[in-house]
Length: 156
Image 1: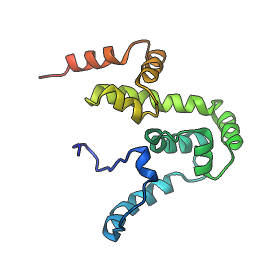
Image 2: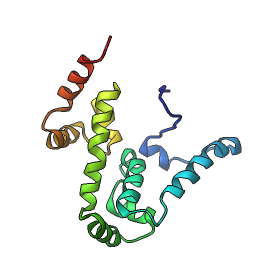
Image 3: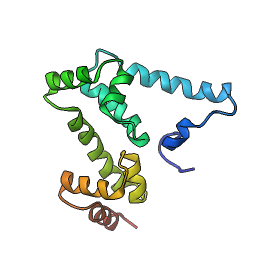
Image 4: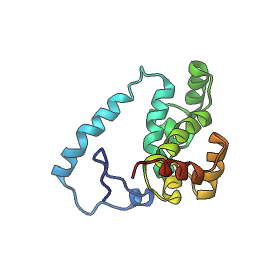
């Protein structure tokens, strides 16, 4: 368990493929309101970029943040997602993924003590080296230097 500002339960991607051995109505009733709230946030009237970003926040840690996976969850084709993103904001799916990952990466580095490997996993990278390369592209510095600076300026 990790103490944090919000109550959450996170599973590893491979756990999603394991069967549930028991069902718990009381546990489900505690999760269902939040799931309903999040589903409502994906209102079809919302801009496509907001809908995609919302889904990416859920899909990145599972490694399922692909164009086809997001399109499936939205109930539209991958081509429709790309077209609406281009029409509404002039961006591609890849750009939305990167603009979602970058601030999360900085947040995890500055606000947590999570190991780099775990941050890479939470952002949907297969390898920490891929995460480090992307981070340098986004911010022009290494994750290690950002963390070191953030932790050196914290009050004791």
